[in-house]
Amino acid sequence: MTTTKNVAVTTDDHHVTLPTPPPNSSSHTMTPPSSNNVTDNTYEGWLVPDDVRGLHDGGERFYPRELASLVHDESSQLSKGARADAIRSGDRIVLDTVLSNSDAAVRMGRMLERAGYEVTVVEVEVSLDVSRDRTRDRWLRGYVEAERGAAGSELGGRWVPSTYPDSLFPNGAQQSTCLDAASRLATENGHVTRFERYQVVDPSKPSPEKIDVQVRLSAGSALLDERVALVAKRALDGTASGRPRRTSPRTNRDHGHSR
Image (cartoon, rainbow, N blue to C red; front, side):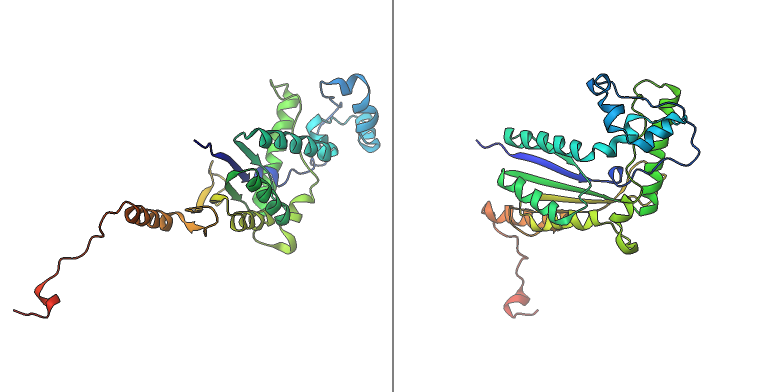
């Protein structure tokens, strides 16, 4: 008996943009993370930039997640290491990522194929304006909760440089590079068995709208609309089972007779 290894690759607006804090935001102290980096002065003495430290001395408050972009490369290395360990173990995994680079997405797909995985790709598309609004709200919500001392909010809200979302919609493009990358990953990798596309049409609704779903009937075959694939699969299953095809009853007219 063989065990199928599954991986879901998702890309959504939660990672597209996290804006810089608005000017004149209320703040007063810098809150360090609870780790060994505090006791050995790595956090405040080396990680925190001089300009941030100057703002802190002037009364600004910065929470650890607000400085997360300073260790983006390091956190990416840790994430890739954990992913590699899971793949070596044959675990079923979910890769929640931006897919901002189509070449890198295709390489990731080939790596998963070599490891024997069947892949489901889920892409959630948003407009640049919606992405900006949602990520600003996420940062602000985390910041306000931390200011209020809400349980579990000690790390505050998080953002990345505000120039990042524009890079995902180059030259005023209406669709993001994430959609292009997800499409290439699904199309060029024969072990992608399912490709689901969603769109945030109404930002006030809690869930995005499903655009379409494409599936492969077998590894290496073409992606088909899910409804078309279902019809094709039923036809193939009927042929394979040896059941005779249903034909229309012959009439006298079929033999050239008439009444």
